[in-house]
Image 1: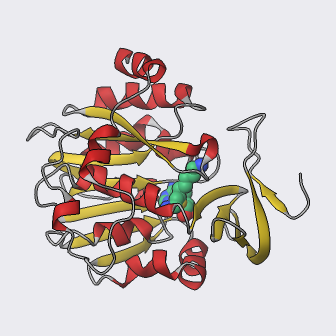
Image 2: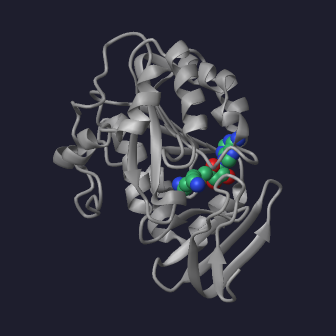
Amino acid sequence: VIPGWFSEISPMWPGEAHSLKIEKILFQGKSDYQDVMVFQSSTYGKVLVLDGVIQLTERDECAYQEMITHLPLSSIPNPTKVLVIGGGDGGVLREVARYSSIEQIDICEIDKMVVDVSKQFFPAVAVGYEDPRVTLHVGDGVAFLKAVPAGTYDAVIVDSSDPIGPAQELFEKPFFQTVANALRPGGVVCTQAESIWLHMHIIEDIVANCRQIFKGSVNYAWTTVPTYPSGVIGFMLCSTEGPAVDFKHPVNPIDANDSQKSRPLKFYNSEIHTAAFCLPSFAKKVIDAK
Ligand code: AAT
């Protein structure tokens, strides 16, 4: 540990730890679920940390939030009802709000402290809560989904932390089953699905489960986020049986139809959307074999 630096140490990425220089610690608290910290870094703006793991930085949050949102929503025509699980910072809400077809945005975040801290320290992220179509439910995403009537949503976005701690069940098969049930025929899910460099064993399991559950398409995509472990993060994108979804060719390109011209996209475009599904050979071999 280097004095004055934050190092991200976890058994999920043994033997390595990305570090950021701390200018100032702005908040430290303990919620019912996790340790919550915010610090000012010298090169990535403010940083939100939960249980010692970086959730977002001001500088690169666009890469993650735009990709986890627009990969699914640009892949279906006219999404109207969307559910976000996790994502208490509000960044995914901000991105969902770009679609003028959307009528209802539900979010279920387990930890109220994440919401409050984000509103206090990350106004350009928490701005997502200002959209009148948003309803916040504070609670466990697993329990919330169990109570959702079948066929309710066009899309479910699972912006979850890593599977150590409160998000563990969000990576398990029964959870994916409840997501499938909550989606309309031809509805889509996009879940945070870890790093091809660090977590092929986790990805393998998720892909195997999703192939059993989702009878439409099942795809893995990835992007770069410099402050996430190994600098990349992936997404599992699936659709339920019904109207076919071809994730690789967006039918509803948000870069052409963004309703929020005053807040332009920073990372996502239709070319990067298609490119996100190209996998390195070592990952392709494992994912295609499942
Ligand atoms: N958009 C920022 C990135 C995140 S945030 C993940 C959120 O999921 C956190 O706010 C956490 O409190 C919430 N969460 C965890 N478990 C649950 C649950 N069971 N139900 C609802 N919300 C939950 C993800 C960062 C990825 C980090 C990669 N290393």
